[in-house]
Length: 175
Image (tube, rainbow, N blue to C red; front, side, top):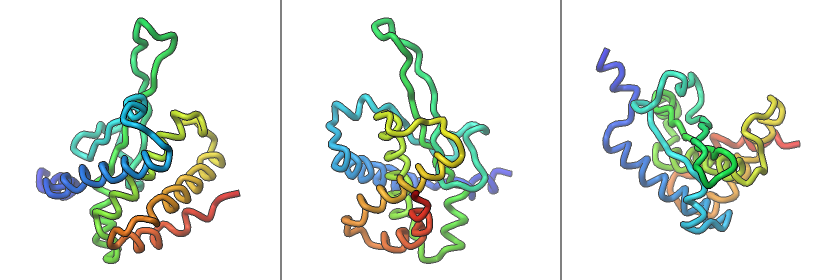
């Protein structure tokens, strides 16, 4: 059983790539949405991988999902704050890399994390509601894929073109 779990999870070198990809993604997001380090503190989120996820946070097909949690209301506030968790699905990413030889882990992580951070910024800015109906979610996914593509296509990262090709059909759902 332990060996099976290990194959589902990122190893230490891959976890280091997750950290590096997150830094790049935050920089790209900061540039696009003009976020300062002070503003980032308001956009509360964490990023976790398979070993850290609870059973409810694990999904069978996606590379990542966002889960929203409510923070307790501080005494000086009138309403609760949201907290988002980006749940990377190692168990889905690793087999996809084996199936799709053209995909490389690092550029895929940059794309996926950037994509999820775009969602989070849009939720915090109230551009999109977290709880939306199916058609609204599909349109939002296409918008976020397009925004992610526009932000990252300027980047000269090797192997990013293959990621754009992999996700090309996801950008086409826009109304």
